[in-house]
Image (cartoon, rainbow, N blue to C red; front, side):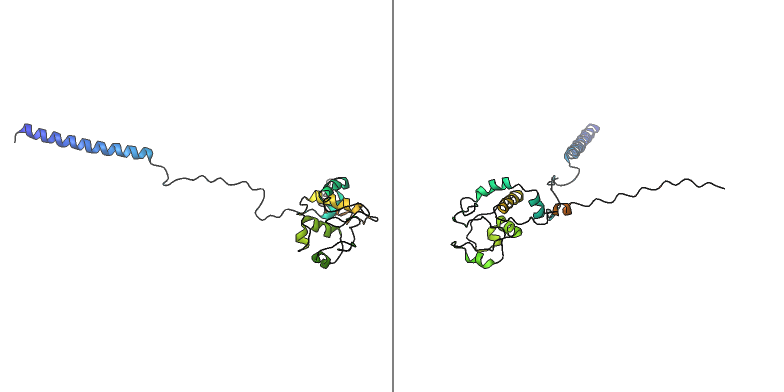
Length: 205
């Protein structure tokens, strides 16, 4: 084999090596560009805004405070929701439900001529502020088995307005519960720190 043939073989080998290393270098460059910094997929988690801590109970305003701020005029308008079943005027007729004049302070199930449910008659007690508030909020929850199909007044302000109006439909309206409850419910102010008395610097003798 002469020198020319050896040069041809050596050239072919070098060419093959150049192609091999060139392809490897190009492959590395491609994967380096497209390889993510972190393996896998990143999922962005958006936290929902929360109005308060989980399980945090909303502070309930005492009924006495609500009644102190209630408006009987607005309560009369709320009472129109009940007008299909009840009357509120003195001497008013019973309808689907009993007449409600003088209901405040009256014993449960005591209107003559009205067919009360056994559940209401068996409840016992009288209609005070708390009892009316619970019943108007959820009639079937307060007296299981009552015939009253009304779902209740869920708005606390409207309920207080209605109860105040019903209180006025009475020959002798009972006093409001704990008239000063609003003041008692107000947070107490921290006592102001006592002013320090100015003391003259001691003179050195």
